[in-house]
Length: 595
Ligand SMILES: Nc1ncnc2c1ncn2[C@@H]1O[C@H](COP(=O)(O)OP(=O)(O)OP(=O)(O)O)[C@@H](O)[C@H]1O
Image (cartoon, rainbow, N blue to C red):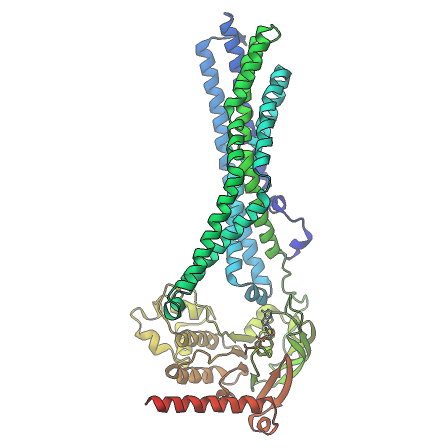
């Protein structure tokens, strides 16, 4: 799917895999519409003949009143059946398209740099995977047969009318043109107004979500007035936009709809036909068939209004899906190499986030010995997380290289890299599944004993056992209410079970409350035994004994060394350390004054 960007973009390009179903559905819908038109012409013929006292004869069968009803019933059934199967086929196509798009998106997202998913937020991608794919499903299922019908029916009717009597054809077209002009007048500023309307609707959605999500903050810090005011303001803006739109377009739009309804066309054709009939220049058959056909033409054109809107929305959905599919996949080496050890080295690494002007990392040179512990420290925004995330290839460097065991990580096969590096995130994600499965997923070949061994080392086994359903307790949003520290120890258990030689810990102690801290420190100690460890920790006490401390400042390495050496440098580390000590002291004193 990564070559998608070379392909044509847009709605019809994305529907290509189900074009066969769409074509059949459109054909059946058009056939149904044409059958009805033919039935109407036949009805006009037989009625004319009956009125003139000489019933029409086709293939030796006299079309008297009864036979006409039978033929009409058959034609109606044919029209209905083809329309019905048209919808069945379009729905089958819609389901197949949904499956294809979801699979392609899922497969592609598994291949794009993980950093892309982090930067874009899983919420936005979820919307594309759910809402936009569902939107295209609805388009294929409901609109494609309607499009065929609303193009073919008026066109065929017009041709038939022109053949039957061009003057009556012009009379019915005149009404339709008047209807279209009125509708166009009603829609004159609709683009700008629609944008405003859409914007105010999205503002309401945002305000509602914010109001609901921020409820704990609202209930603690706000009496509800400021957040509710935002919601209320959005509602007022929405109402104003809507009423302005209504004021501008309500009357002409309603008028246009009335003109485009079958009755005005019928009246126009009736008056014109009566005049022509009386003057003797029109046959009765032409009059009757024009009366029947012209009403159908107006009726078939009405859906064009909402179809236009639907096509525009589906086009936007198609572009959003194509945008995700065109994100380049992480390049994979055709001749993968195996790392010759677990030393890590950054060589002249530069890295810039997409859409950001400044480099996040500038000329990073760094060596981490296998089996050692390296701590990354520095002020907020200095580049520590970025360095950590480049090791498992969340993004690729812009220049320079990162080596593991002397092999550029771009040359290591992704599955080998995954088996080499594990990452303990700051934000722990648990699936809507049992706690056991949430841990076991890290190594599907692990036995139950191995899972328990990992949870014991992660200091979480006793807690899990104390839950009413033990390891079978559901985790995730709707599952057990786990604290941040407990979730983090589950993640550590995952990493222990994965047992990779390199472990990257991102702010692994951020959640630690005093009760949890000791257990997390023990769990981490177990995780890091005999491993190459890179850790970012804000609690400097935990990294005092690191083999190497790398101090970052504004995207550059400013100091490297061990704790004692760095303290003598009088540099950034010394400052960070004294700030840290002051803060710890302040906490202690505060703690004492509370006693
Ligand atoms: N996904 C992203 N997109 C764009 N810019 C980013 C992204 N993530 C980080 N940055 C920017 O890159 C720079 C380095 O950020 P990074 O998160 O690596 O710093 P850090 O030292 O880990 O900070 P902290 O201690 O606050 O986590 C910052 O200027 C930050 O704003």
